[in-house]
Length: 318
Image (cartoon, one colour):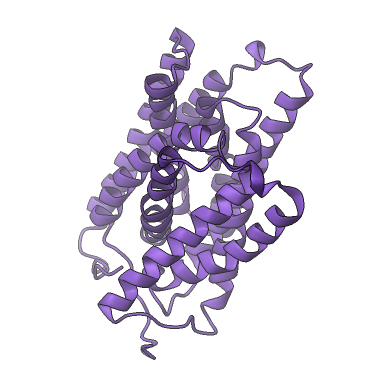
């Protein structure tokens, strides 16, 4: 394994936004994919399998590239934060919730991270909220509120209340990881740390599944194999590396607000592949979220142009 510990540089903003588009599409489509997969496999075991396949994929890539290395002492903190909160906790909470909540609605609530990230980023990270970004935040969260549609929610259903509460807890867990990634001083790159974060997440997930779930209930099939293949190399290995890289390169508020586009893709994919209904309320909420996402990114682009050449742009890396 390489012993190189030179500090890792961040992606350029343009590359980060390109990666973000890929994450939005792949993670959006994965909501109905997960919903179908959970009909054949218990939720915690599904999360453990996803982490294991993702780690194996990235270890193989790094070995071929000759860049496989152990995390440095400084990077251990972000390994534990991302592996424990963004991966293990988030996936367990989401997978349990998907047993009670539709894929489209789950995607919306799981991406309410701006509710937690934005005030914390302003208070503790010194990020600024200009008028355009503030308007984008209001539009995006307004879209989430419209999609959630509290007036149409069955407040008497214990399963529905539990599922929705789990999704909000998942969003909060991921928010903590977003904030830590933004302030962490990296030595290794996100690509080099990602498989170790997945290795950290997989054993406790497998142990929890062993003690709480019936593995004999797994319905192995070609379809389940295809679902796991999508979730391992793509939705886990690629997307978790990509989103951490994006977190490093863009402000925390921009990242969390831009990821609201994932539930837009998730709702549309759920309607297309699972037949979940589309309504005027749904379409209106999606439009608000997309407008908010565009405004936030335009505010960042305008700020970058205003900065001119005062700061040299970061060197693209993993």
